[in-house]
Length: 496
Length: 131
Image (cartoon, rainbow over all chains, first blue to last red; front, side, top):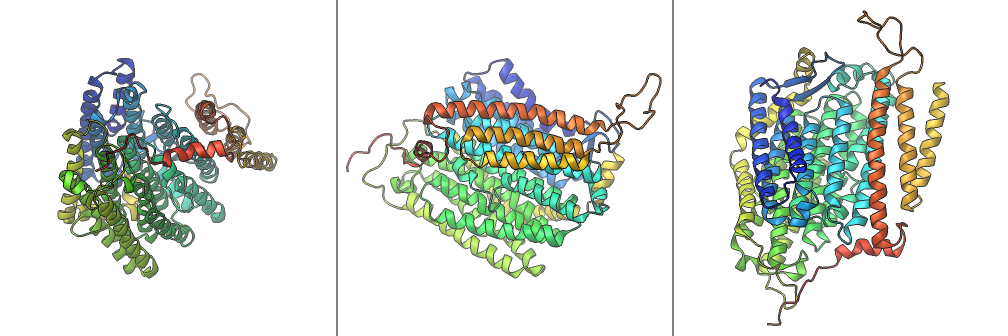
């Protein structure tokens, strides 16, 4: 099993091809997709186990030697991200089996989802900058496909904005890659770490880094580049929105973490200071805008933005503890956020609307759904002992420890405002009496089946909160590994 | 030669931004194409221009005999061109479909903005009976 690294990418691609060639379009489609997702989850577990044992594992595709070839690398960060992708993919596919309609399956929902998963895993595992660009393009294409899949009224104009802005960001990315190649003559990330440190023209290197920060900032929805996100996400079917909300922005966050711990580390007083400013503004603007919204999906979309701020704050503080906090935050947030979007879809099924003014008394009528909302929502707001509390605590503690008192205060205040937003949804949708006038519930398709992934993700949130100690140890090891990339570089060099 | 190409890239990028900022989406696509080509030229220049021999290894040899042109930027550009084609075509079809719905491709026009706002309206499929 030396080729283990390639399976999380290859397996979903094979299943996507199977879907297209065998024209799986009937009721078997859901079963095939779930089987594929479970197999993907299994290989991701295997990869995680391998990384726990070897710390860093490398595969040189085609056995070309360092640094000419293209390599796949998995360290703690990559392995955890691949594993969490597989978990969310499985949950979403299980949910989608009852949620997605036949015309959406005919429009290619399942193959697109598989390709998207493959591309996300590819982006997490690649050790080569140009490959990262290619995986981002694959990811974009698949997400475009899902976005426009049944040509519905109103969604196309939003898709135009999403597509236009993302194409622009990829052009920035490839410009930055071209400049970096011109400066260093290499595109291998481990090789770049050595060569970027030896570049004499630090001004040009830093501006290249800033261009890359802009490109990934658009994808990660950093301030002031986040306006496309709420417009794009709130028109999607619940299953798709959950997958996008959980993972797409986080790939941008991952790329920022990888590049600004491995490549652009010589001028941290410029790059990481800017990251910190952007992170604080992202947190505040996301949460404040969310407070003024009344549509559940819009509230949740704006919260994605504010949560991305926390992760980038951890990167900007740039200590092993802060990076550990970022990793815990990523895992906690991906689980909680995807879960909330799934719950949002169920609320829509139960009440016929996404708008808070149209719903009420769900606590009385849908008890289990209330639990399904309560746990991820108040984990997101940072209530102990749920996972969000520890994630926020780590980030704020790391801020205080390194003397960033303003950032710590902002992070704590934003947590309070998040609690306000979540309490608003809770009061309006679950406690308030049902309003006199409003839409009818969607007919007869609210099934217990769709509660399964929601409750499983709730269980993960609780378990992550209760068993924080082992998760902390792993995150701290990951943080050390990111701050001191010597082991990563040695593994890549030795793997030739 | 490098500085000349750098100037050309700069001109192309500024023209591309001018087109993109006009608000008419079809011009945005032209801007995107122009900028894609500018970036390709930039990668080509960044790969150094000096040696002109093709990077081909002769028969019965295992190494390049003379200094040769850098083959990697060309491979990168080729990939970028292929991806750029696909993205441009997707964008054009998306705009074509959007035009079907909105009858305009001017992002500042009311019909385009209204189409976006449709999704913000509460989707009331039926009314509950008065209790």
